[in-house]
Each structure stands twice: as structure tokens, then as C-alpha cells.
Image (cartoon, rainbow, N blue to C red; front, side):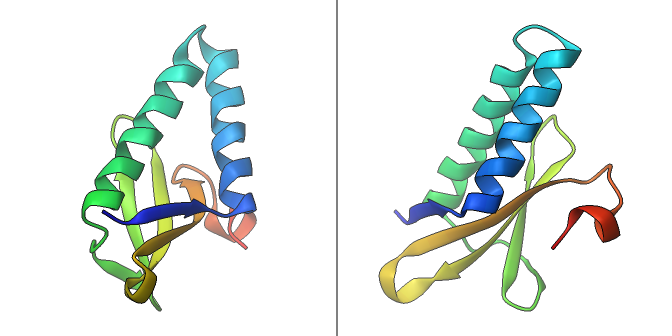
Length: 96
């Protein structure tokens, strides 16, 4: 299994998603957080998803329009989560 290290920016993305979904419906933020955690578990078991750009891999969050952007350091068996991006937003305004 690979360790998952969540960068600060990704933590902010996740919290923003939780906050947004909680305003939409009670308990939906928790469902979003649970869905993200399930994808982190999948990444920790097998982080070798398709490379989308440079060395960055992406994993879709099921049932939510978010992509987890991460890279893998095989030498220390760690996946670094850089961002959890809402795919419904304009990437020019929402991606560093």
C-alpha cells in the first residue's frame, strides 16, 4: 500500500466541496467526504492511474464532479495529492 499525503491546497479543495454540498443538502457534505476518502483508499492500493499531464495522474470521485490530481513517488511508496478539482468550474480560474 502507498501512503497518501494531502497537500494544503488539496485539503482546502476538499473542505470547500464539503462546505458547498452542506449548503445544498444536509448530510451531502459528509457523502462527498466519504466518496473522496474511498478514492484515496483506491489510490493507496494502486496509484498507477493514467498520467494526464506531466507526471500528474487523475482519479475521478464517483458520484461527484471532482478529479483528484496527484503524483506518485515510487521510491518511498507515497502518492501526493495536489488538488481535488471541481470539473464543472473553469480550469483557468480554479487551477493553479
